[in-house]
Structures are given as C-alpha cells and as structure tokens.
Image (cartoon, rainbow, N blue to C red; front, side, top):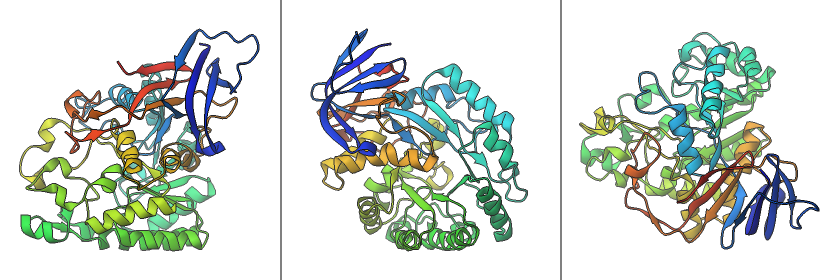
Length: 425
C-alpha cells in the first residue's frame, strides 16, 4: 500500500526528530519525510492532525502462553492485543510452551506468529536445557534459529559455576543475556515486599536483598566474562546504584522497569488485592520514586510491560495462593505517557524508552523512522480521555489493577509493514 500520513507531529528519538511533518510509505517502507515524492499517489491518506506519529513500540518481555495455559492466551490473541497497544515488535521469554531450548521451538513460535499476522514476535532462547539450571542449552543453534538473546526466565540458576559457564558461552556468541534477578532462598515463600504492609496483612515478605544480592553476584560474573547483560523488571531503589556503578565502569549492562513498578507500590495491595500481586513485588513508595528517577537519569533505558495474561481463576483465592502477573500490553503506552502528564518524564524520553532504546538492546533494525526503514508506526491521540476497562482488553488476560484509571493518551492507529493493522473505532 502507498500510504500518506499528513499533518502529524513526528517524534523519533533515534533521529532526534520532534517536528510536524508528513510521512510517505511505499512497499512497506518509509519513502520520504516532509515533501511528497514526485509521482507518488497515495492509496490511503491518514490525516494525523493533533496526533503524535512515532515508531512502533517494542516490548522486551511478553508472556504469550505458558505450559498448560493455552486456553488462557495464545500467540494470536496476545499479538493482536499488542497491535492494539501500538506494539509492533515483542519478545517472548523462554518459559513458553514448549520451552524455547531448541530450534524446533523457535520455528514453532515464528510459524504461529506469521500465521497470526499481527506483531513481529521474537524469541529469547533458554540459557539452560529445560530451564533447569544444570546443562547449558545449544545457544549456537538457538542463535542460528533466530533467538535475539538467552535467559533462564524466572528460574534462577543456583550454581554460580553453571552461570559463569553460560555467560562465557553467550559472550563468545555475542548473545545478550536477559536476567530476572532474584535469590531463591531469600525469596522463599514470600509473595509481597517485606515491610509494614506484609506485617499488617500477615503475608510472607520478600526483602529487597533478594534482588540486590542476586544482582551483585551477576554483575561480578558479567565483569569477569564480558557478556552483554540486560536486567529485567528492576524493583528496588538500592539496585539502581549498583547498576549505575557497573555502567560507569564500562560494563555492558542495561535494565528495564515495568509500568506497574513506576506507578504502584506495596500500599496498592490494600486488603489482599491479588490483581496487584506481581513478581518482583511492588515495593515501597521510596523505591517507586527512585525507579522514576533512574528512568529520568538514563540508568534504566526501557519500559517493558512484563505482560502475563492469566485466567480469572488464577486471581481468585487466598492472596498467596493466587498467581502473580499483570496483563500489560494494552496499558503500556498509556501508563508510560501518564508519567509525561505527571512531569516525571519528557515526551521524548518516554517515546525513546518504548522504541529506540529496546531496539538497541535487541540489536534489531527497528524503533526509528529513517528513510528506507520498515514502516512500523504508532499514531497516538494525546487527547483521548479514556477509562481503563480490562474486561474490554483484546488480550485473553483481563488481570489488571488499573481498572478505572483515566488516561489521556491512546493508540489511534498502528501501522505494521506499511499496512494499517489497527484503527481505533
């Protein structure tokens, strides 16, 4: 399709563009910015007056479906939800069904994603076979099959020697290691942040040392092995200074944070609200403020949904017996731009954290509006005035603590490979 997007406010942090200009698309790629090319006749014109035009969003951590949970979510259902949320590229962690520890599993995901025809879906391969933390996976084969990195998902590797060998192997292959840092012994049977709220509710607490001790070990091994590493879903303020110190010393380390950790705290659990049950747990208001500051300072460079769709039953029952997780694809953009409304971030920073920065971490040619680039684009209405209603999510998971929240930004259009993949009705 030959497509013109006119009168829009273009924001492209990768190319430092922040101006009102027209955009012209042909054959799935960006043909021109500004003046209309000669002999170009658009088959479709989108008048983007009063809209923000930016690269399609990129989400580093999206659980598509888990073992035995296909009735809750599928690649097709969640990729469609991603498109509604303006997300054109997403990564699924290795704790998929089946576990992504073989080229066959990668091929299966790519095949299902291609048949669904919604967002671009990338796989993160398993660091160890079966995510059991004992035998290294065939990382070379996983890389050749298309994996953009490796991870042990939510399964911590308890043996530091195994982790060191895995890091060395990943480093030789130039594969980024994605880490969910948590010490399993300190976490034990805890389910919320260890503090006043856990004491009041009588629930098992998870101290911030669960994260800081694990990250201290990981940083030491990263320095020794030289592997590029990305820390998922940072939750503790004390962790930030450790990551910044490592970055200042030149270690190849990046980090992301979830929108729920930037907006919520342990107090939002209220009286056992299981919709606010996540891992890592929501921490103190001070931690939340420090996480916001870390995004402003560039210590944390990416905001990822850490989407985990769950059935309604998974959130019913005593708090500690429910499953942790939030359905976040369709609120990622609105929650991130709410930080702009609250003057916590600049608009340019917010868009960069959702587009250019995650693309750099993955090493993919995406997240920018350069001439010749693949036309994956998000058009945002900054005057939407909508109420979050999880029951209306396209995602199979309706598990969100943001029900009833009011947002002023929403996706108006999502362009995928130059075609209109979503248009707000």
